[in-house]
Length: 610
Image (cartoon, rainbow, N blue to C red):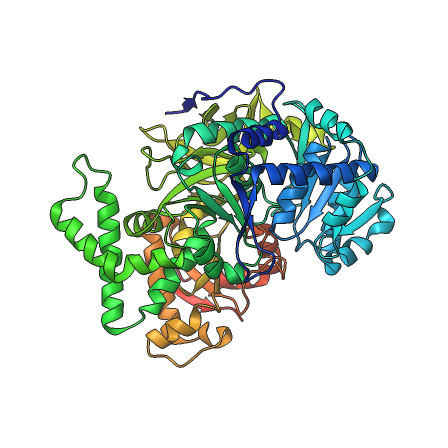
């Protein structure tokens, strides 16, 4: 199978934009809640009706126009995920301008590049620290006219600035925006090289979100549907959900601080979520750790097996049998109900993207408490281009083609895409844009295959394929994902290009380590102590063996080196979307990698970093 296609359910007229999506929602919902927000981190959730939100959007848009923002101008937002981001997004679009998201953790160099390349004229930042970051590079940004602070009342100031401007000016601008007009420039997180500005149109977003609202009603149209955004709105995945929620009939909430996520989930009580696999790994590992020993551990492990068996039985023609249903009911009372409660008690669906989820987690969560719809997409495809849908789930795949999407597998295994959601080009880089397309197909750089159900399975990245000295091509993703599934493993980078065998760089999870040590009768170990401890190394040997079960002997990991640090965004080894910067790891740890191959031994064992 090398070609799959899925027809669009909704055709997007030329006059459609994100502005018309909001207007249509106001016409449908009126005084019903569109967003719920908090004035304080632990305060009550207050409803903002569709009509109230639109009024505030137009008021802020008038303020932007009064400050000199013209149609087509670029306005940047640098903030955590909060209500004001969504408000500013829609106000910028209503003013006919282009929104440029900036990660709130971006370095001065990254900020300078994005604001310069996008030719930004106004920046709205969340905090004084963000303002200082922008101010520090302002001398190299002659086009930048001002910096506004959300924490200092930027939204209110914009509303005041627009009071003397005719409302008709913004109404004309909003109505003039068309499907093919530029909506946003999203800069890739830069796991390799300098970030590229991906230009996405109103039509890109309209096609995906309008088709999602019709094609996945279980999430977006269900009674009392609601979602809590906690991923960065600087990322295309969160921006898609922001617009899709409004295209449907769901209520949107924002959680700016991941440290408060459990409490926020409990009070907001979402019915669907979007997250990256690392979030689900953390939820599973935390639940396993709480039942760390004795009868509790036996109950959890038994329940986990029941969840997986139940999920797999759901794919059979007759479904789960009576005995399995009975075991499932017991496991629900003992374990699953507690998991549901930690996620708010109403969660039925979750959408996972950004990295492979893995069959183990997919089956566990579906059998336990929530069905995870794993999908696949890129910034260049405006987020989802495939996704498992209710009634069309193949766990382990990233789903069938999204509505209106064509998928082709090239002769070398590369996944090629075509559809109305594909970006129009990289900003200021026409040569790179031309290289990204082949006969009208977007070249994703990912490797994959289509199964008998036309579901896509991603097998790796073309640029990350490891070719051993023996000529074996190895896709590292499957090894890394399985090894990272262990509770005390944080990050994994497989190595071995032009080497005699596959090795891996491993970091330990400092948050999970204390609980694991306690459960295994060990004293509390620091990361530096754990990485050389015999029991820990023996445990990692077992994790390596589990990872190797998925591949041939020639592809298996023979050695791992355990570092004394973790990969984080702060130290430059993770992107804001929690992807490892592989090239930087390979460069900075080159000596450690060389040391892994200093002996000719081919035996499996682990080696702590020097």
